[in-house]
Image 1 (cartoon, rainbow, N blue to C red):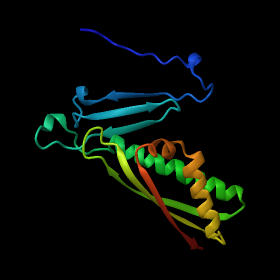
Image 2: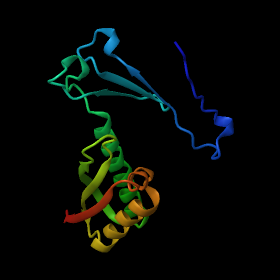
Image 3: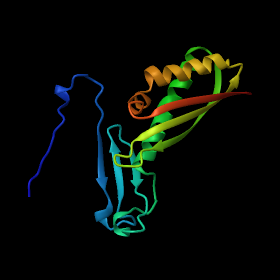
Length: 168
């Protein structure tokens, strides 16, 4: 049996100080409920559980739907990244933002690799006197400049955004 390995060497990274780490371990061999469960341990000390979708044709190859799927976490991470930017930009603009929710819906390619091909993000921003033009600008800046996740996904997916401002 051959063992192939690629080692990332932080000292050789082109961008110093921006490295991330994550270890993902398969839990299926531990006689857990799901044969396709995984646990990710992030470099910041957090854990995330993932599971696969059930496979009716070959149950041993499927998950038990006990946790989010990896692609769902990728979509959620994109929403979190962008919502973080929107709130921060509005706060820095001294707007009285009191809430921000983003609902994402996505389409994926039908064949492997089943990348995202379209993503819609609908933001609901609540606050006192938050101008719609400021929200629109914050969303655009996040999508075009600050949110690394949406910039990366924008290589394969067409993004659309919409928003509403709710006065409190």
